[in-house]
Length: 69
Length: 442
Image (tube, rainbow over all chains, first blue to last red; front, side, top):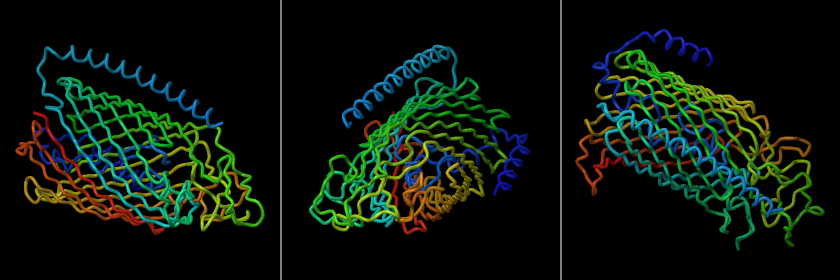
């Protein structure tokens, strides 16, 4: 699992010189391509925060604000 | 004792409200400065008009491992959460966001804090119909963001307040985002702090003065391990780093990591524990607690996540998410989430959703009657047990960028619906329905 993450990091680092022009970003601008959880996902993230022992790294709360761990 | 605790909570809350007021004053002054700076130049606005989101969910769950009754008993829960999110452009560069919602719930867990306040015989597999069966969680979040003239830098701050019958929280955070490489690369850093306070609701049989003539068991009921928690605060500090990169005209990815430190009262004061080396006492069919859960007063958590989204063609997009998580309580987890949006027309999109989750147990978890009274830390909360879960669902989106459907001065920009069916390997099942409406104010 760690090796997958390391590979992903290396791939991202090596590709950091890629430069797509603004006029070529039409597909990347599609709402489904957004690199974040959708606003409506917040409720699912919230119940998962309560029902599972882990949280975070998804833009949601990482702790605090509720009696959950 | 109870009066002193309540006074302490009031004093702590007053200090926190003062802290919020000071932070808001600073943010307000900063916003006004930025506004005067950008009056003389034309720029495309970060947010063209006020956006109003109305979101709501309905959640229900069933299970037989309630933490409030020591790992046995009904986990039945129903939760409804209406929420408003309002984003207001203050000028070309600045946006103020107000996010407010409530969560109205009815649960066997909260009702069985006092299982003896009902006319029916007490039983962990039934929820009590008494006063403790339902409550409301109220939450408000206020955010502010400022974008630089070239839109390559964004700074922001937020404040949050949340309250429910046994918990009060305030939080504050700051964030900074930098874009470069012709906006192909984005780096963000975010820091948050939550300062929370418990108002503990101990199981009724552990409270001072409790007596009941119907207690059945060998000898006299004496939960000798139990004592009230003396520190009622819980603080959470998080630092989040993220890196996003456009990889091609159709592919982009991000990697993010959080470092989270929690300290204070991390146990949940109403969750019972039963020891295997102590005699069992009952009222009706309900076993009286030997103690409440005891967990360490600090926890360090590190989740590492990545998203990779691929624009397959005009019809299909692939959204992927993976998270690896570990903490110093022994929980290690892996999460995979996949979505495949399919555009039926330029306005309608549907997508299937699949999520797989697996975790190891916390070092302090053991099932019902498996802990011993000689242990220092213990819990029978199955949320900290070893399990895996599958969640299947689908979503639906309608987007009309021209907002042709109007209510008063509000034009409907989008409508979203999501459904998820969640199955945990310990038998817990849940369903969640979510809807969202986005309106633009004329």
